[in-house]
Amino acid sequence: MTDERREAIVDNAKYLREVRPIDPDEICEYVPDQPHPAVIKQTLREAAVDLGLRERADGTFVPAPDGPLDAAVDQVEAFPERYARVLEDELVGEFGAGWPTGDPGARLRERIRSVKEAYLNDDAVTYDRLTALAYAIYHLPDYYAVGQYALEPLLADDRVPAQLRVLDVGAGVGGPALGLCDLVVEAGGIVEYHAVEPGDGAAEVLSELLDATGPNVHVSVHRDRAETFEPAEEFDLIVFGNVLNELTDPGAVLRRYESALAPDGSILAVAPADKQTAMGLRTAERAVEDTYTIFGPTVRLWPDERPGGDCWSFTRKPDVAVPPFQRRLDDAASAETDGEFVNVDVQYAYSILRRDDARAIEYRPDQSRVAKMGDAEGYVTDRINLVGIKLSPDLRDATDANPVFLVGDGSERIDHFAVLTKESILNHDLRESEYGHLLAFENVLALWNDDEAAYNLVVDGETVVERVPV
Picture (cartoon, rainbow, N blue to C red):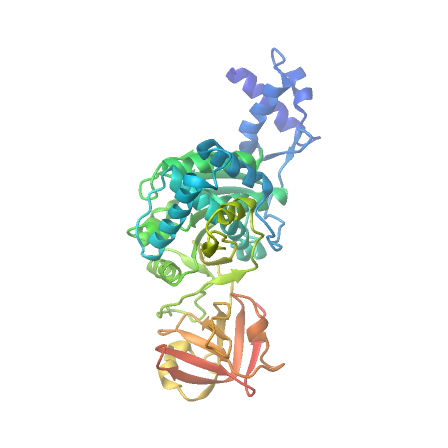
């Protein structure tokens, strides 16, 4: 296409966007040589990000909303069928229609096992074709849900633009990307999406899945490593999805992308909820406090204080439905492995970093009224008042009778756990509140737990726990 023709199409779109929906059939009448409407449509798609245009189902184009995205995250019920079909087509193309059975199924199941073991041992994983497909089978459904749920804190604070520019560093096979792109598009927005993914197998699967996101997601895939990629523009959201734990120096990589983050943009880092990777995320977060503000969830409530402790902090959401491809692979395994290859649990750790000093919780405690967790050594065996952020679901195991929750105020040197020994109407907010909510504890008993080398905040019949509105 000549520059003159493209300029004419764009000029007509700029005029019509203020008047009525832009119809490629109409524009072709005003363009030299009257190109086919399909050519007009393709040109408008290529210019849509610059023009702020959204393509409708009828093939016309309208302005995308300005300002923050008007969206909220309901429960994510299932992995969308259109993406499941793409993955199954990839599996059939690679192994044939009987991919869950025989040698192909055995290889996929063994690769899932080996990848899981590598993650637990903090070993490097090379994403060849087989690994990428196995990883997609096991992790796409839950990571799709994470891609939406993890945006909740930013959506609630109107910090996700409706015209969203995303850089996904270490995109893998695209689970979180698909979730967040669907969320934005279904709420009426558009996405300029750039993926950084060096692995051949992962990039191939990612590209196929991204093709199914629709015309309002504008995709570029860069075959670079996180440590070497040079962004050419600024982004509203930079995502590190389950990748920081694979880097030698995650703090250095996070700092490297500071200049690529828009002044009012956010970095969203997510990690699996297992202890090693979730704690590793907190270590990386603490390593960059000189560069970024911790927006959430581990907000520093006390000025000039930084937390210590292990902080195995993660959240849990409802399971998604079992997708057909997981069920088929699992059903083809031996009876004694029933359920091993079904993974629909949605639990994850996350950190949101910003450059503008904004925090999800803008609250400063009154030290004349509440204790600071950093001073815990001085109040053991006392009943005290304090405030803290709920930083976990119920952590009790089968041997524990009482619900247990990690809490923090950003000053703690050692982990604090709220232990609910006697629930009442006065303290039920401890159980009922959500991850990341700020809670006020009145008359809570502080004890040292020698077995866990941590502090217990015993919430009993004499304790009041209330959510603090912020």
